[in-house]
Length: 93
Image 1 (cartoon, one colour):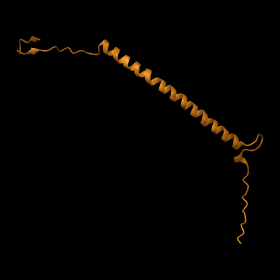
Image 2 (tube, rainbow, N blue to C red):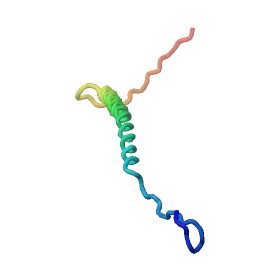
Image 3 (cartoon, helix red, strand yellow):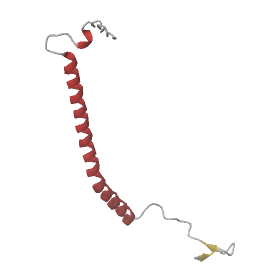
Image 4 (cartoon, one colour):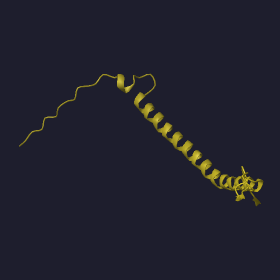
């Protein structure tokens, strides 16, 4: 510390450190690398599971559409005329 002749006080170092040291930056990079190495396989497994679920859903939709379409050459179910329901007469007695 240096003495200030005008005010009689102590002059402090006005230059503050700006930024990070090299070791601090290296430590942050190492920690991020460790976190990425542990988390990345979990996300890869999730994406493959999601892809399998989408394919299973698509397969179900295609089976449903195929069942609705009926045999080759016939009209799809939604285009076929609706048949009136026949009432069943129930006799009591």
